[in-house]
Amino acid sequence: MSDQKPTFGHVPVMLRETLEYLVPPTPDCLMIDGTLGLAGHSSAFLSRHPGLRLVGVDADAEVQAIARARLEPYGERVRFVNSYFDEFFVDYAKEAEEGAAERPALVLFDFGVSMFHFRESGRGFSLQGDEALDMRLGSDAPRTAAELVNELDERELYRIISEYGEEPFAYKVAQAIVRERKAARIDSTARLADIVRGAVPSKVRYGRIHPATRTFQALRIAVNDELGRIGRAVDAAIACLADGGLLGCISFHSLEDRIVKLAFRAKAVKRERAYFKDDRESPIPVGEAERCLVVLTKKPVEPADDEVAANPASRSAKLRVAKAVAGTRP
Image (cartoon, rainbow, N blue to C red; front, side, top):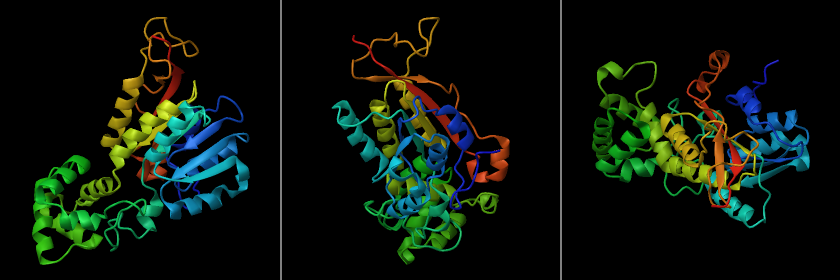
């Protein structure tokens, strides 16, 4: 029987692979789901491992309320934290270093935006329909997408769309946005999508993927500081892991995956010759309190064909997993 089951209309991505790689070392260990969302992954872990304890972190109170309902049967095994994951892990790592917080044996991040946000939140994440240009994952994000689109100068818009959206026609899109907002403020997803469609060459206006997809991604990343938060969260999660703890990161585009890959590489020990085995101490001297990693996925794991067929949103997902090892005295 497949582990891939919808939860509250949500299908957790790469669930089988995540369960295979992130195996609790002890029955009652602690897991932190840094991107709880609708609790698809967390509910599967709690069901499979009856002694597992979980901390679920999410910045979106509306989404977390749904997760609470989903995880209610697990009672006191679950604790909820309403926070951005980077802020939570930076604070938690400090507490763990001071001995004031339990080091987790498992940490999971799924950096994708949930289908709830695209289909039900009404915050302008989707190109379908017509919604207000908000795109905030947390209500305390400083600026909405509408504010960025209407207030940033052309150069900064170009930078965001080019860098975060990897949009080849970013210059034309930025020009069109600045030109059109002079006529009327851009406040809706439909209007922005039409502006972008009109800005790109005709040969790409009506393809399989909407021409505004990359621009919407770029604005969402900028509004929520997604890449900065991922970098800070992964570094802090590594620092707080228990010895032998496992960290899994699911990313959905090259910008996210690169951050995870470089963070793992920066802490990785080299498994050369016969000097290192999984249960031995690292052969590379590092600071006593520093955590090193053994990267368990030489290349990122991708979803199986049957998952992509059943859930096309999973097609770009990549899973990287690493194991924490204790440092030795220099």
